[in-house]
Amino acid sequence: MSANLRFRIECADGLPEGLPPHLHAKGYFTEASRMTRGTGVSEVRFYRDLAAGTGMRTLRNIYADLDPATHDNVLITQDAIAEGAVFLDAHSEYTPDQAAESLAELAKLHAATWCDPAVGASSWLGKRLGIHLERRGLKEISGNFDGPVGAGVPEEARDARRLVEAYRALDVLAADESPWCVIHGDAHIGNLYLDGGGRPCFADWQLVKRGPWYLDVGYHIASALTIADRRKSERDLLHHYLDRLRAGGVDAPGGQDAWRGFRLGIVHGFFLWSITLKVDPGITSVLQARLGTAVADHDSFAALGV
Image 1 (tube, rainbow, N blue to C red):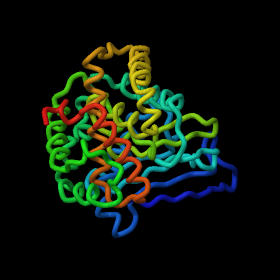
Image 2: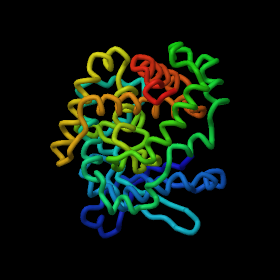
Image 3: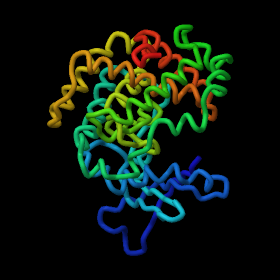
């Protein structure tokens, strides 16, 4: 939906101190993309107002701002690719050890904003999950499940109507869930990159919002790893995330509450990828299979009373 431009700058008297020469701009500059420019507002505000205070690894912000009246916005960051970064997708190899690192980054974000009243007062973070139900739903999910893209979704999860009902229930639950924090909102492997040192970092913050921690964690574990790796390591990874949350000064949930949250978070990711239409079908197919299998493994629909 956005336009992305990589470019290099030169200055006659040399670059100002601290300004890298290789930059990346993201905005909504064409007539077609202007219709969707509102999707960039939350990302720009995250980089402008929140990112530095979280301590997590993400793109280095150079300039981020918006026109509050028109919602025109632009984000300029350091060009991570020029610094040796590699952006990932569902076909990328990603190990449980790497997942532990990316979960530690999510724990930094969550701990830094955990029930923070200043964050709670930020209206731009108050988006509900239900907005996704207003745009796509039963028709798109059924089309995916009935075609080759959804071929890897197990029968236990291949019920479009039940998925919509589960996501509607999750929307109601998440809206009033406490404790809450700032979440990435779309924490799948395709929104990760490895920096020049090989460390996992998060990008693409269009769905950032206030919500329960598990919407990131269940989604991330179930989408980033192969089904076999996820089954072997998911409990250890969940405990690792909770340990990192406690290290950040948070009274983290534990026991059955934490496990229930993990089960619910998977539904968030499964719904988002089940309504996806405009992504490489090979990537969509892998993520639907991973997330759908996790839903089936953990009877996640039943956890939402559906």
